Length: 457
Image (cartoon, rainbow, N blue to C red; front, top):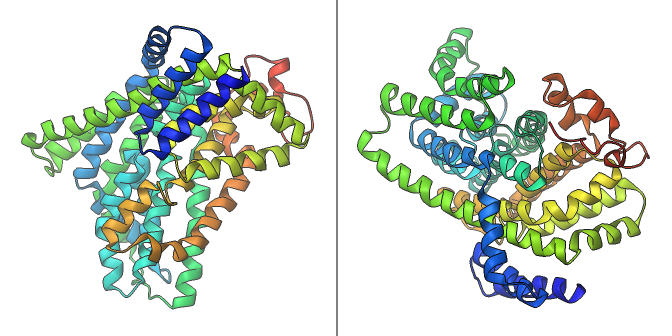
């Protein structure tokens, strides 16, 4: 089986080096490995691809994608920017804080880091340029802050992880991401404060209570979407999948009927964009399902688990090793395929350490968010440089302190389980005994050896 594993990895890497689209590279590498294994690759790959996308939870993805497109085009960003400005604009370097807070709010509402960079950055970066802020700093703030929206629910990547991990509650993942997303945003704000102090950036006049209330009233309906989606899930009114459909109805009513920022004639274009994006995501999920099957047949997860556990019996060392590997992966692989490929590999390892699957999912997403800001495949970095009319080479130096802040937040998320698990327990999305069964960072044995249902809802 070692030969099959080597063939799978080598074929996949060669296809990536040839700039083959990653979904196609995954499918072709799987096809070659299955052929070498002796099974019928046509039947095996097709069957696993069909089974991989045959999940009710995945229905949420096209709906959340469509709601993100509607909100990105529907004038919500400007209202959120005005509201954020009344809250933090008075601080030295206030526009940097406004940018960060708006990206967090908009990213959480739209569920898309790329949409946050283009929508918020399209207004904030030129505005910060006019006020004398360094152009590269402006791009760095927008690019890194936009990724926090993937941790703060609702988030498509959490749905992908829950499917890849198997039987992990989407609602628990949603609640688990709130505090880590806010923590990452806070660390980014610390860097903004340091830059602002060093460069003596100006602040805006402090807003009065009346101005804050007016801005909040204008942004209230946009912010209320989070309450509708998360509140409905927590109250048991609808599932996470049904919540995605509710989000589309809400966003369409808000942007088309109330704000009138989107014309009815523009809806077919948005539906086409949604269909295109959904097709790419589903192809990735299907192809990755086939790869997961052959990896299991080739005992790759077991081999990786044995290797990592053989390095050390200290969970701190093993988690640090996994984080370093994922940080490297994030520099050349987009988040969705990375989650689909590496969840089956690393999840058995951390479960043996006693780490809760929900905690690991948040750690993995927080880690791969950093990859969205790093070359050569940093989607948010490319969009931010395009919006800011600068180059990656110029931005990279300014990005370094932001990278360090995101890594620092990642370390807290990794080694302090309560950052991810406290809120799901408080909202009854995880049972307290499941979390207490986790022996991570307490030197015990795997929780899943004692409780096979741990981590499921």
